[in-house]
Image (cartoon, rainbow, N blue to C red; front, side):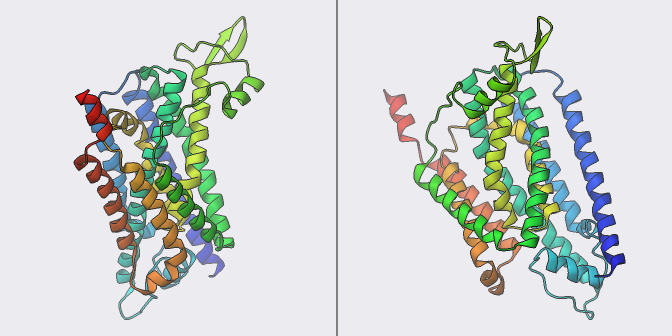
Length: 363
């Protein structure tokens, strides 16, 4: 590409990315100052309504990409189309002057939208696994439900920053060393198999021996009470509280969770912008989804196994991507398989009764 074409693409990316970040910041602080100004436990109705609102917002971005996805990288010329599809390994045909630029822009937009939607559904599904861990953290520390929203909000802010660094560093490494994807594939297959055979066992967190707790206790003064605050001042000295330690543990769990989720979504697309957008929209609804999952956690007991199959599928897809695209496998097929696996996990959870629960009710 010419220097002008490179600068043109970078300008488009910078403008769009800056606008996106400003929009996300506006939504987050609207959530903090208006929606979540009071600390309270969200009811099932509230959590369901807000989950629908956040999911709708994520789907609206899909619609935007469907019509205007080319704006992100400035794909409005044959040169840009050829370069971007090759750079991000989009499964699209080469440019044909006889079909015209509009045809290929639409083709590019639709593929980009499906890559985003597949990644969004994937991240949303995997985030349920992370929610189970967060529930475990809160219960282990005995945090009251009314303080969950505050911890989750700031946890989401930290997650966005961490994801930004993780995604764009990983994206740069993949473009430099494409063999890294195969390492990701092997790791995902291993993770999926591990979940498949171990299931979702009840675990407990040792609140004294956990490495995050040890780190915080060693380098900070810890106040045993929190009164809903992350920091407390005592005798003129500033102390962190157990609520702040819980926040650190939530951030730590997100880093561990990202080790699975980021490689997973890079199996769908290696465009770091689409990876980031799908991650952010999946994270935005995490707080209301958290309260929703608390209400129905015992219903979808097969969801863990669905997630394990999902990880195995996307891991295997990385190893076979050169062959499956030759067979006509597209991003739409990936989306369909992701939907089917998750829907099957939910369907089996509903129609197959829990024997343990049934025995308990009978006794």
